[in-house]
Image 1 (tube, chains in turn cyan, purple):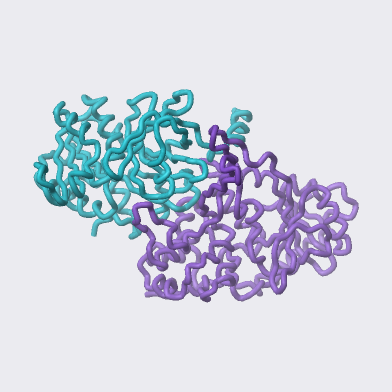
Image 2 (cartoon, one colour):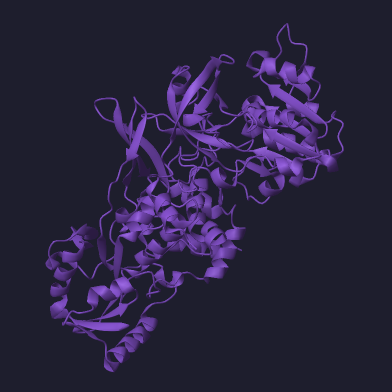
Length: 288
Length: 342
């Protein structure tokens, strides 16, 4: 039986109404990126999947879609890492511990962690791509025995731009995740690789049929990385990407995030390469 | 009662009766064009009109719709719209009714949109069947929208000295029952209606050179057609075509803060996929950079994507995009040149 009351209630509460939230930690990770730890009112758990996003709402500055960079296994709070790039993120950079903001979501489809159980993982992060991937990596660390061998390939422009330095060292130390870093331009202290992230892929040792590759980075990176992963014989439905698009509603209505017929806010931001192959040309990430 | 009749001389009486029930929006003349406006007197209504500048969309999906009221410090939100008012859309063309049906599909699809659904709940639609072409820009026959196909409460069909009213819903029936000047249609009226539809068949011809399934197939194949480059050369990216389209619903979200700098309102405002920053992200990447890509997107959102998603074409055939285009881009021509491409 349809519960009339529930239906009416649903219509009364707008999906545009953000939940009140408080910043409980805020500091700069690099010159450009700020880390924010956020607590929802009444300490409600966000209950997201790794890879999902929220609409961050600051009254007077509207809203912007931001990737969640903590795991759902981190209870009582969630983390965001934002670059000062637009109107809302500029305001976010001025905010401090104790400040209030609004949250809608979580939205979208996250990384298919349930399908990844028992598989080896090759995680490829370019630049800010490590931000949404941190939600997955933390989830893996908190459920380490559910996954096989985990390798992380990390690339950014300069050593100064590397995000989560301390945390990455910890991942390395605990030897639960193999990390391999590369920068486009090194400085005198840099001891890792120099060059594009694609140069790291041929050298990785994987069993392609038992491996999920998860790739997140700037749009330009995808097609080059995906080609290398295909050369490694990873099946296209085991190559996972997360795509950035402009979004205004998160509800599959406003139209900004559309790639051809697909609303990224509802069907994405996580897609498999098998999904991307069906696009006719509006998706930069398509190879060849 | 399925079909009723009202004498033309009694129409004013009925309109007065309707105005007592709810706000009545009807087509009115505006200079050499037409608009939907609230009417207070039946004499203001113009029943013979070419599609209005804006479709009645402005009443169920307003240009600027309040989403919520907010208070910055302390953080508070409240409902922006307390109550939705009953309203009647009067003398709506069948193409615009098709537009409303498209919007229903979009906003009912989860997550549902309460603003739209609340307004739709309060809406009564009284249509009017076109007995002749509005102008050369319409493509309603190809879209199958030149004859009533449901989605309304009442449909008016003009005969020489009276209107036949097709009663399509309970809501509609209530607006005609127990009025002594509206009677059930008799056999003669039904014969007249049949004759009228036969006459229409001779006058109205498909505007596209292919059928809808053929058009769908062509859109599937012609993503990289030179047609998109050709119309991009003309397009000035003004967004007129999307503003006047009965099935365009893209929007932006904006905040307006009061002078107190503490209280404000969040709105959604019509936006257009033809605008150059529509698909641009903060990092600077623009995912539909050229006007060719943006125009193509607009067309695909009428003839391909909604067919895949909702099994429904989102072009109603009203012809507004062509009529309002400052650069003279013609929808029928675009589709026909796609069909013609080898």
